[in-house]
Length: 231
Picture (tube, rainbow, N blue to C red):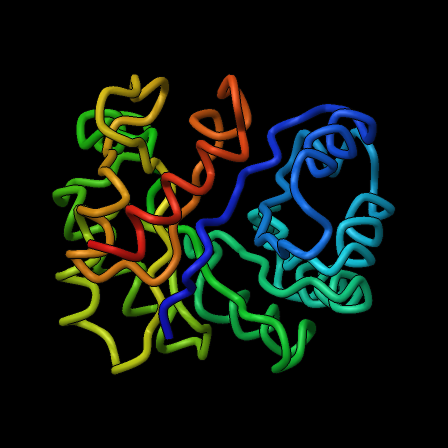
């Protein structure tokens, strides 16, 4: 089921920055936020507890990738934090992904990263020594993610349609790299607007700097939310 709220990437480095940002929004407006590596490593699990106590939903974006037993044990810890969604790297393999699912349990959504949206085909082939096309690599990872029993993948919006065709009904596609028209792509290589992502079938979108660095983050968020839902 498509999430109507764009996920806001809380790409901050301090607890106070997060508090200041969230206090811009009315108490009754419940957000869906992404807590990534920088914030989690700077503040620790208390940031998840704080955000959950405010009633917001949390995507904990740590991209675990290790041996199956280690990932399983780590997921047991994350499950206790009450996260709504978290992720692993599909490159860790089916056994690792199954272990992650077992450790996290069936409550939170568990998705896998295929290829980062900052990765070009040339970089993938040279750095990872993967000889197929970028799309073939993404589809392969998505199919393995489904085989492992996970809920979906992180992918570029440009890959959603083929992933939906290659996986069972209900397989989730979360797409970062979303930028409203006129906003610079930054370090993202494969980007789309909210309306384009909606039209192509994305289930979740993640938006960071166009909201968090806007002159008026609340208005920027609501404009992106409207575009995401009215496409």
